[in-house]
Image 1 (cartoon, rainbow, N blue to C red):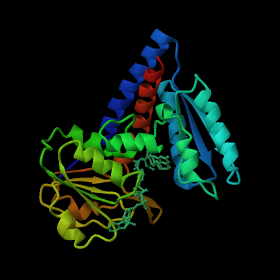
Image 2: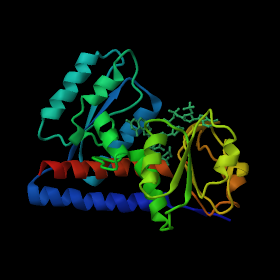
Image 3: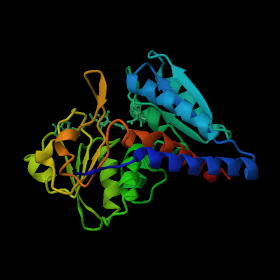
Image 4: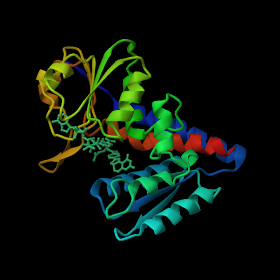
Amino acid sequence: MGKIIDCKQISLKIKSEVIEEVQKVKQDNNITPTVVSILVGNDYGSIYYHNMQDKTARELGINFIKANFDKNVTEEELLSCIRKYNDDKLIHGIMVLLPFPGNINKKKVLNAINPNKDIDCLTDICMGRLFKSDKIFYPCTANSVATIIDSLGIELEGKEAVIIGRSNIVGKPTAMMMLDRNTTVTLCHSRTRNLEGIASRADILISAIGKPKYINSNFIKKGAVVIDVGTSSLNGKITGDVDFDDVIDKVSYISTVPGGVGTLTTALLFKNLCEAVKKCI
Ligand SMILES: NC(=O)C1=CN([C@@H]2O[C@H](COP(=O)(O)OP(=O)(O)OC[C@H]3O[C@@H](n4cnc5c(N)ncnc54)[C@H](OP(=O)(O)O)[C@@H]3O)[C@@H](O)[C@H]2O)C=CC1
Ligand SMILES: Nc1nc(=O)c2c([nH]1)NC[C@@H]1CN(c3ccc(C(=O)N[C@@H](CCC(=O)O)C(=O)O)cc3)C=[N+]21
């Protein structure tokens, strides 16, 4: 029987480190770490995350500015908002919630963020630097996956890591972070042939496809570590990609949904904010 990874505990540890850092810069430098989070429209997941950020920022002593825009906002309005915060020395981090609606040029808007304030790794510069193993900030979801795996303290060098899903925000940066840990990385997607065969080679299997309970025991090598990134809605409940009951006897460790990757995301965003503050001192 596999062990459930206690992600809540890891999240609490990161949060307590952030609290310490926040108190230190307040005392030593008279700075209150400040983040602006921009929400356009009313995407369900984004509203959830926006509220979660607000609540967590309060807990950690971080100044949180909620910027809300109607779905009909113009590209120019968003750009001038971001430029204003780029130039504001009292703002240390800027993030834009995705997806955003309408015919706004997403690439242009995201790349307007000053890379030194890009705590969600949304700009091409930040992402490019990650791909060259020279990060400015780690993207929060990929960092969450990597942090959970690191917490197990197992030897990773030379192990087979299989990642299912190749999106820019999850799959690709997660592959880079696993490569940096000297695992042998295979990145799978919807055109992959024999997904079961490839997945069941994995010592570490990371699933980020968004198909509830798609990954059953046929995809699992005995003793594998399984990290479930997927968050879909099934019968009104948040559900991961992995069919937990079917795989639990075969895995060594597994992260759950809810209570898994998502629980670290907000804490890691604010950890990045602390790093952004240090760039200003
Ligand atoms: N917990 C958290 O903090 C977060 C969770 N998520 C969740 O993670 C999941 C993935 O998100 P995201 O990366 O943005 O999603 P995308 O829809 O952008 O990407 C999904 C990826 O999965 C691949 N895929 C889809 N179906 C299959 C299949 N049957 N077999 C193999 N590959 C498949 C797609 O392949 P192809 O490229 O060929 O289309 C694509 O690469 C979602 O459930 C999302 O809600 C996302 C961000 C944060
Ligand atoms: N630029 C951008 N970056 C993002 O990282 C981003 C985004 N836009 N848009 C919205 C999605 C959604 N998202 C979540 C973050 C935390 C939880 C979370 O805390 N989940 C907990 C609680 C779930 C529950 O119990 O309801 C869990 O999985 O255990 C969920 C979802 C980040 N996103």
